[in-house]
Every structure is written in structure tokens, then in C-alpha cells.
Amino acid sequence: MPLLVVEHLERLSYWVWLEYLHLSRAWGKQVLFTNVKDPDERRKLSRLGFVEERSVAELDFDDVIVLDPAAPSPLSPDDVHDRTAIVIGGICGEFRLTGKTGRLVTSGVPNARVRNLGSKQLTTDTAALAALLISSGKPLDQLSFTDSVEVEVTPGSSVELPYGYLLVDGRPLITPGLVQIFEAEYFEISDFPGASKLLVGAVTLVDDRILLIHRKVDPILWEFPSGQVEYGESLIQAMERELKEETTLEVKQFFGYAGDFRWGDSRQFNFIVEGEGDVELVEDHDAYRFVTFREYLELEKGLGKKLAKPLLKVVVSKLEKLETRWQVIASANLFLQGVWDGVPNDVDVLVDDLSSVRKLFGGEEFDYGDGSHRLRTVIAGFECEFMDSVTVGGKTFRAGGEHLRPLEEELEMYELLGRRKDREKILAIKRALERP
Image (cartoon, rainbow, N blue to C red):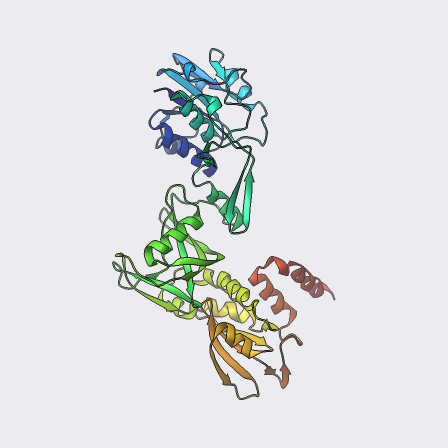
């Protein structure tokens, strides 16, 4: 079998690592990474194949083929023998061909035969896979490549990759795990991946309460359904699989990212979802319960304060389904202080129609004693209290009327919610506060 030589010409980013991992799984032990100057990168790449600090130009091979898009002839099965070294450039490609392979690789190996894999800009792992297929006897003209690929990142969001990928049974063979990088960008996850072992957790809402499961080996640990990301999965795919494997629940609705935490060489990325179905536990867990956010904090620190903001966003998204006027009247400062103290305040909401709230969320109605009517319920794990009016300092306020909060508190609440649609409102409040 021929030897694949990858002339390493980039920093070993997570993207490059995923491509190298993909091609090494296809080529097995017949991979040599050359020009690896950094000791830490040599250590990492030694897990995937042979590693050489020197450039391919400094090494001697009996028979060398350099794959260069600018070559006049395509690679054919007849070009390759068991002692052939097939050289590709480990280069992060531009959107178009720029001749980088010729300048950085081909020019340094003057005695090599030079072949192409067509005129498209292929990723490093795609070039390696195509070379393997051709070496095994399949002509290049029997291989098909994409011009570009659109990849779904989250429901309703996608990115376009302007590269050629192999088509297998009509579907593009994209670098396994690559979507993780776009998920990290979309959810603004810093320092991704940041650990050698990636885990995911499902903050699962069922009837607006948070699902926690109990692990047999730890008598006090209650946790979210969670587990390790498997090879080739996106973070969201792994989260959906772990939720189903550990509880049999399916994801009914995806709400968003809920933060991460680390320990040792692991990092767990958590997502808020609504689950549907009946809970059935696997062998690792022996009990489950549904709790409010306040009860969750009392049971297990877990994400703790970090979970407050994304869950509050879910509360607001659910409130927006109300066919009534409403406003959150709890002070953002008091709300955050409650989280910092370990017991968050209830979320208080002023509405003009309690019946529509009860129809959507259920709950218990009662008279407060000051002439207002109120309803208590739970939304996204938060204990919420709705009221049709509230009296402060002898003055009665109703939904859609005069705001109860000073501008400073209103600004803090909008910034806490972090919604894109509130950006103009935030700027307007800031301008108002800056006026003398």
C-alpha cells in the first residue's frame, strides 16, 4: 500500500485536527505528517500516524507523487505502486485556487511526479480520500465532488462551505465533527473546544419543570442527561442522542445554549430543550424528578448561576406567546442578587388578562388583598407570579401603562435578556441616560 505524506503547513487548529483525524482513519498506519516543527503538535499528531519534523523536501523516497491542482495530468491508478509516497499539502484552502500548493510543496520536490485531482478546491481530507480511492483502482473520472455544501448548524441556521467534498451515494462526505466549529461560533462559545474530552448536557423542560436524573454510583448527585460526544457528531446531535439513550425522551423544541463547565480534561456544553415522551431510565440511573430552578439550586450546584440567564430567555420566549400585553416587573438587580445568594426571586409579570395566562401555563389563581388578582405557575423552571395590577407607593400600575422600573434597571434587564431585537431599545435607553 502506498504512503500518504501530509506536508503540515498550518497551525494545528481544531479544524485542521478534524481533517487529519478523518484522513488518518481512512489511511490507517500509512500516514506520515512532515514539517511538524512544534513539539506539542508532534506529540498530538503521533496519535494519528508517523510524524517527522523535517519537510518532505528533506526526505528521500523511492517514488514520489505530489498532488497539485496546477498539475497538467490527473492522478490515475497506474501512477501508484506499493512504494509510492503520495504528498498532499496540509493547507487551509482559500475559496479559490491560488497556487499555494505549487509554491509551498511542489517547488521543493523537483524530482517528484506531479498530478492533480481535478480543478476544484478540495479540503485536505477530501484530497486524501480521493487519492486512496484512486490508489485502490478507481479512476478519477468515476469520482464526484461538490462545488459547495450547505451545512445546517441549528434549526433554521446554516453555513455554506465553498469546497469540494466527495459525493458518496449522492451525499457529500463532510469532515466528521466539523459542524461543532460552526456551533461554537453560532453560540459564541469561547476557546472551543478547550478540552480533549467533549461532553454535552440536556437541560430538559417537561411541563416547564427541569428534569434531573440520579446516578446510582453517587448517592447525592442529581444531574442533567449528559454524556460524551461521539466521533463525527455535532454537539446538538450528541445532546439529542444522550437524552434519548438515558431517558427515552425526544427533543420537542430546541431553545438554545445554556453554558458550559469544565473539570479535568473534560468540558460539558449544555443546551436547553423541551422534551416529550415518558421517562424510562437506563442502568446508570435509578431515579428522576422534575424541579423548579430554585429547587435545582438546592439539590446540585451544577451550572448554578450560569443557568439563570439562558433559562430566563426561555421564560421570555414563552411569555411572548401570550395573546395579551405583559411586562416583567421584577428588578433585574434584585433578580440577579437572588441568583448570587443561591435562591432566585420569583419572576413577576404584569399582564392585562390573567385568563389567557392560565390557559397557556396553568397555575393557581388567588386574590392578593390590594385589589389585584394573581396567578402562580412555573415556566422554564422559574416560579412566576402574574398579576393584573400592582400598587406601589399608593399608585396602581397595569400592563402596557407606565413602567415601574427606573431606566437603569430597565437597561440592566434588557442586557440580561440579551435579545437581538432589543439592541435598538438598549441604545435608546443608554442615550437617554447620557442626557444631562
